[in-house]
Length: 168
Image (cartoon, rainbow, N blue to C red; front, top):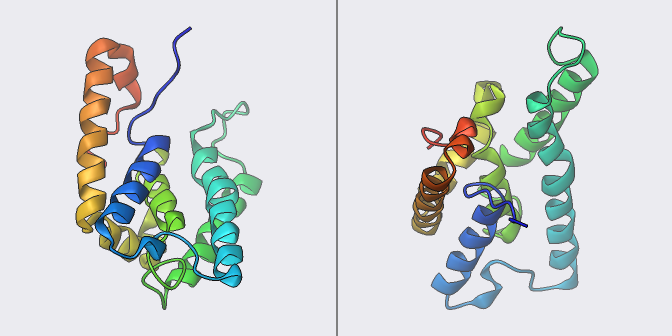
């Protein structure tokens, strides 16, 4: 049995988080320093991993009715991105500093282009994503994941049908 591995998707957040942790002399960079910080980190990891992940993934699900994504789905996507944009308007990161939740969200935002969601309606999310992509450890992780993706496509050409090339 072959295990499915999708570079530039699930593994990217872990790679970013590990590089950020290794680059920091303070190991609390990616994690909480108090129980309240831990609660907030868990909240954001849950929000990113459930609501935001679903909002980004739903437009990729084929619509059985043939009429495009339904109004309920569209409303859910808009509400989820509105919530995130509001959070990021006055903040550099989801918490007080870069965290594993930011690494997870960066990975998720990299998957937006195939969904055809236009992030220009959410300028704080766009600016946040651009800031994260400029972080040296983020760009390093993406370059390594892109190389893994290209190797996977070379081994299995059909894997390239959902290509992440050109996303960054």
